[in-house]
Length: 305
Image (cartoon, rainbow, N blue to C red):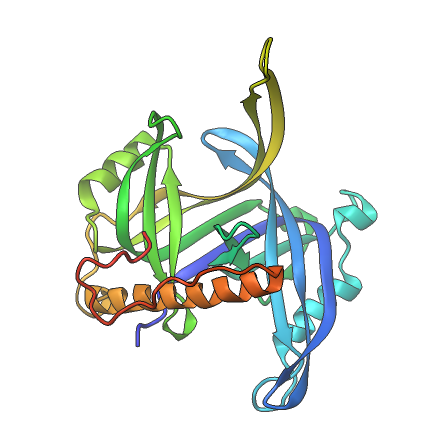
């Protein structure tokens, strides 16, 4: 089984929103109490050389008891946020708690919409969040990961025109050997040159960077039957991982991920997504035609990147 790779996120800023609630689920015939939801942390940091105000959603979840039946520290930590922490939404920016998350991780949130299209974007998960003094708060939202380079190149827009950004699709191994395909970007010319020069597909490398969880305004033109077209605007949420540095030399030996193991993980991901598609289609009441199940032969197989 694939070993979990390094995947670390640090967030420090002002607690912006708290949306946590108690719940329960059934496991092995027994009801398990839990708590979960999302908090948002406001972070001001430089994105592409300019100060930006980020609203970083952090997904949190924990069962009340561990598998051994003892109290779960993660549950207690999340419950403390719900019952005693103050957010900007509840008390204003001056009264809001400053918080620090050091054990976060990047995971992909993936599901199929009502049209049967895959929706996929990175989100941050964490089990612990600590309150810190206002004077100790040094805002940041950063990551360090180990990944397998699946593909890379210059980003192009819908018209095929290069945007000036560079993309990397990386394979990250989560807990239990689950593989996520995670999109990364870079705008720094020096970093782009380094990635283009030193990183090759199938290499295992380290990357560090900043979270860019903001919003942007997009304009699109709606044609009319006659007269001038209508220009409309819409606000779009941005959930991006911007690489600001990385390893020049690929990892080797026990530190590198064997490509055949990564292929197996990618094939299992396709099967996982197919089950998700069926589940989402059933939930939406839609009838979708299932794609053929992945075969054991990997030659020429589309692994989803």
